[in-house]
Image (cartoon, rainbow, N blue to C red; front, side, top):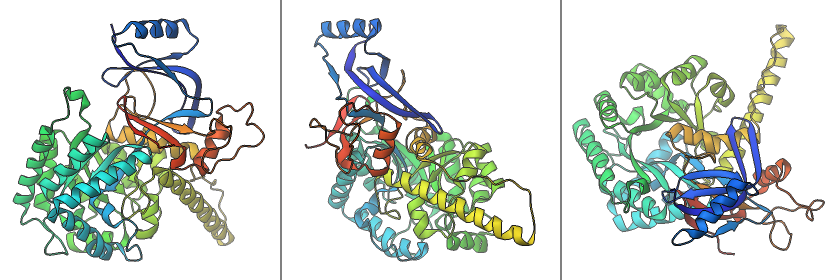
Length: 474
């Protein structure tokens, strides 16, 4: 007999496929002792009554909780690209071009944490708290070059209840002489050591409680020799771990790779065995349609980081083309190249960027028709808020192969409670409702209003694998 951990009656909101918003009212969500969703059934069904009766006889008995009518459950967000040590300097130096910013801010932050374990622990603990406050339940994180500092990051994320894929940086080339690994061999040795030690971190009485996983992390082509990249490709295959890096991000980075290596960085990653179904590449703003097709064929995913792209790339990412090609895409905050840790900001930036890009392309086509008439149909390259919500939840989960992103039996119960109105029938936070408050019901308009205007004040609770890891102070 299945033993229950949680029985919760709620309205659920999710995007099971791109562009599809699904709102289901009055559902009984049954969570088992391992934190998986065992059943989802209508609360008035005979099956629900049977489950509630069984739960009441369990030792200890499980009591049913019910969310108020102005609240709903949403899958937690997935942040596909974040530099954990750079949280130290969040919101600094963004007036600089990428390669200069890396040297003056990013490397400095990473070097400071590598030299100060106590500071690293404080920074990472606060980062984990901020992620949960923002509804982020899973993160793909870049760390530093020092193994011990990355173990601190992994341990903190596990203890705070954040699902974290942690990458020890690999880089045997650097513009900062004090922040570089001595050789490709030394870097590979430490990468393998980190994988082993990360997997040894104690996580509780059951391995199902493990939330942390090691990731192969070549920073990007300019900081990695061919020897190191090929070694990392072999290590990733041998250990069966995910791979993360940066690909075709900015003009100065792309030009640097072409001039020093005589190739595109996608070719370099591919030859090194680093373009696989377990690969997540950030940015990809300079990829052309044939290269997007290569990404799809390889099974690699893309972390779209619209806010940092606005600062460090001269081109927006061709999001619609990537989605149309069948590439798996999720969203990344790119802390600290992006100054907002909240994936809601990434969603909104993704939509606004796509709309501006669509308008620009349409205007350019109209101008071109003045001199060269064409019957080629217009293609809408914008996305809407529902598609952005998919990228923030199911898209990111698909990229990492996680059983999250939607509510269905067999998935982890990774959820956030969103409050739209309070017990006094007033809108929560920045939300105001006037005409419908007495007979308020969660519908598409209400969810869209939250998507546009909502913030952390609307987030009441967060569960990761059935365990409540965040509860807002009211």
